[in-house]
Length: 245
Image (cartoon, rainbow, N blue to C red; front, top):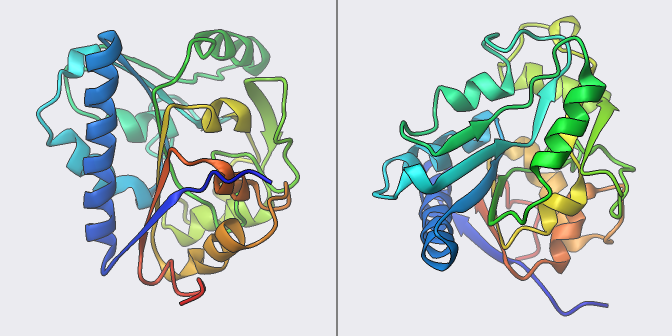
C-alpha cells in the first residue's frame, strides 16, 4: 500500500474553500512557469469550481504562459450552448491565456477524441477538479479503469451524474441533460504535478467520505486521490460532514 496521501483542508464556507483552492492553484502555476516557462492546466467545469476560478483569475500571473485544457464535454451540445463545459470555462477564465484548447466533439466525436488525446501527451502541471455525487472525477464514472490506456474516452453518463446537473441548476430537467460525453481519463488527471480538488455542499458528503476513507476502488473513482501526495483537497464543512472527526 502506498504511503502517499493528499492534504485535506476544511473551510467554514464554500467561498472560503474556493478561495484557498484558488490560491493553491495560483501557486502551482507560478511554480510551473518558474521551472519551465509555461504551465499546462486542466480545469473542471462546474458550479463547485466557481469560487476557485474567481480567486485564481484575480491573481497576478503571467497568463500568457498558461496553456489551458478542460476535462470533459457533452456530445450533442453546440459549442456556444450555455451548458457547454468549454463555454462555461471560456466565460470565467482570465483574458490573455496563452491558449485554451477546448474539446469540440461536433459531428465526429471519435476524431476529436484522438485529437484531444494527442494534445494531452505532454506532461500536465496542474489539474483543478471536483468530485461528483457518485464519486466521479471528470466524467470517469463508477467502474472506470484506473489504468486506462486511452487519454480521452467517449462515455455514457451515469444516471446520478445526469441528475446532478439538474440538481446543480445547470439543466431544467433530466431529459435535457445529454447522455454521452468525451472525458479525459483517470491516468492523465492523477499524473499531474499538482492536483487541486474543490468539493463543496452537503450532497457531496457521502462521496467525499467514500473517496477519502473508503477502499481505493474503481467503484469510487475519486478514491484514487488517496494515493496522491501532491493533491490538495479543499472542502467546506458540509462536504466534510461524513468524514471522521
